Every structure is written in C-alpha cells, then in structure tokens.
Length: 549
Image 1 (tube, rainbow, N blue to C red):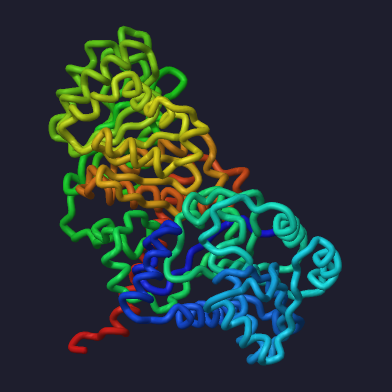
Image 2: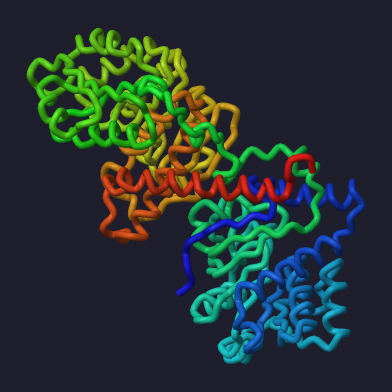
C-alpha cells in the first residue's frame, strides 16, 4: 500500500510558487530560447538530480536492482539519464521502454542512445504479451522508477499503460515518480484513468498545482523539487499567482517578542457574535481560538438566555447578553446593542452557531454594511449572505469568509460536487466577485484574494474533520486580525497554525480521537514550533551571511 500524504521539500525560496503545466512548459521554453540553455542540459540536470534523490531516499537500491519504466517523451528521457547515473554509481538498473526505440526522438532519443551505447539493458514493452512476460521481473526489483508520462499528459490513460500502472500500484516495492506520477493531471490534480501511487516524487523546477491539491496530493508521496537550472529571473517575471503556504514566507509580526511593559489592550479586542440554543459550544470555541492565538481581549455577544451557560464555559473571555425575547435566538432589535458593543473593538468574528432563524439572518444582513472593522464571517453568517451576496460589497471593513464546501456551494449557487471539482477556481471567482478573502476549508485549504492570488495550506489531517474545528479557525483568524495582522496574513497564519496544531494533536492522540478542543490545546505547541523554526532559520541566515560579509 503506497503512502497517501505529501510533504514538500524545496530547494530555494522561489519554490513556494506552484505552476500549471502550461506555465512550466513556458518557463522551459524561455530558458531554452531566451537564455540559450539547451534542453538536453535541463534534462541532464533533472535526471542527475532525481538519481541523487533516489540514492539518498532509498538505500535499498544498492542492495538489488532498479526498474526504470520509461515513455517515449521527455519524461522517458529523464528516466534514461537516471538509469545512466545509477549504472555509473555501481547500481544495477534496467530500462523498460513503453514504445518502440524508433519512436523516441530529440533530447530523449539522444539520452536513449547514450544508454544503449554504454551497454545499458533495455526492454521494449509494446504489446500486452510483452508486459505479461516481464511482470515477474518487476516483482524482483528493489525499486521502481516511474518515468512514463510527464506533466504534459492531458488525456485518459488506457490499455496496456493503464494495466501497467495498476500492476505497479499492487507491488510492495517503493516507487519514485519522475516529475509527476504517471496518470495525474499536473494542473488540476485529477486522475486521468489511473495513476501511479508514488512514495517519492522528484519534480523539476517548480512544484505543480496538481501535486498539492486533491486528489493529486494523495498520489505523489513526499514531494521534492529539484533545481534544474531555470534562471531565477524568469521565475520572478512569470505571472505565477498560486503558492504553497510556507512558514518562512509568512509575515513574521506574529512571532515578534512582546515587550515587558505590554498591556492586554496592546493586542486587540475581538468581538464575537455567535451561538444559539444547542450551539453554545461553537461560540465558546471561537473565543478560545482567538485567545490561544494571542488576542488581548475577547468579548462574546450572546443571546441573553444563554449568557449563564457561556459565563460558565468561558473564563478568560467576557460575555455581553443581547436581546433575545427569551427564546435563545437574537431578536431583530439586537443589532442596535451590537453596534454599541463594536465601539472600541478591533475586529469582529460572526456566524458560528448563530442560527438560521429568519430574524437572526435579517439582523446579520442589516448589521454587515454598518461594520467598519475587519471581520471574519463563517457558518450561519455565510448562509445569510447566500440569499443576498451583494451585501458583501457594502461592507466597509475588510472581509474574510471561511466557508466549508457546502457553504461555498450555497454562496456560489452551485453544487458541493462542483465546488470540490474546482476548489481553486470557485474560491478565486468568489473572492473576485465579492471583493473579499475566501478561505475554502477542507483538505488543502485554499485561500483566494480579490487579486486572484491563491495560497494552498500544507498542514492538517483527516482527524480534523469533526464538529467545531471550523469554529476554532474562525476565532484564530479573528484574533489575529484583532491584533493588527492584515486580513491575508491572518488567514494564512490562521490556517497554517490550525493545521499544524491538528497535526501535533493527531500525532499524540491519533486521528480518530481528535476533537476541536484538542486543536485549541495544541496551539501553544504549534506556536512554539514555528518560533523555534524561525529561530533556526535566522541562525542559518546569520551563518550564511554574517554582518559585514
């Protein structure tokens, strides 16, 4: 069974950029045509880098032999280079070419001829009968290298190649994919018929979007980016607007030491509007998420009938009873009191558990155009907006929306399946049309801005798919904005820390047992980890570039 997680290791900071297949092809073309670096040099850099990665990650390769499965295109050419270097290093390698030798042209053809000239073993696999004869050989390899299809694949895999992919996936041996697991769409992450489930993917130049979003992320294993020599200025000039969230690239203001004379008022005052009968826990978790991420003060606006419950639930947050006519649901005249309570606050978090009662929904829609603070809207607040999304453009404060796929579907007027089929596209469209930041929750949470920038979060795990985790995130983003972080930075830090705390909790408690409260409990550990990592990075930077250097 192949692993289905992805961790990204980058060579240099530009590699937090994520590209489509077309963008990568354009960078390759410009490197060759404008900078004069021959394609065969890029192929050599790619193949040697992948071979070095293979030896480093799979010491078992030296104890047996490596099967290199190659196609007729440039991905196969990378495979020939890998096989050559392995042979030169004393590691037995055998190439299985899924085409005729005569069909391999260009730089790939040159590297194939080098492989044959140096006495490399090669078997042509053209017919099903050929494949039937070599299945036992595959089973005896210590490692498989998938170099069949590259990032240019755009049609469904069928026939012999689909059968081959299925067979490789059934084997116990580890698999390293070259650039991308064969069968994956590099841009959208879709599986085109079937795809290799790799343990390690050595991708070239930049990571591809389809490698870090689902379902593609479940096929790449550990993802490592190899620098093949594309000039940095070309990457910096390219219009690349999709990024993987990287802690080292985030606004470091959150990590700044607090002065000895710091006062609670220095770190913001978040107002939370949440909760209704049966959903007091949502309101409490928003407040706790904000406090754990450093907000100095938190006040919860809660229906008056529920105030005693929340006063018992919350020790560090303040509560403000709001008119509810004794029902536990905010009444229509509550909005005036809410307006008064917003005075002196630095951010607003609205929606979790507040209910879909008609008078509550109307109050939300009436309130939003009056708010001048930065605000994060979640859950029932998003449901209210689904009926009148134009209200978002009337908001005077910066807005962060945090929908799950179902809420996103209601807001966009489409199905949940359509949202999940194009998470990036749907989030971008919503952010642009409503002039807000969208945090589309789920595996690989997507953050989109009105400027069409997209950030994908690498942290988090399936154990976080439980009630209340989204409420914690709302509080965290609201708490960070209350402290003065710009909305985008608050969203980035919020989802990253939220996922990291969930990962730490899952490591100790297991995914099955994970609950939302565990994320709150592990937030101090998550913050400690990012601070320690930042300190280590500062140390490395100092050693690399000491003062006066």
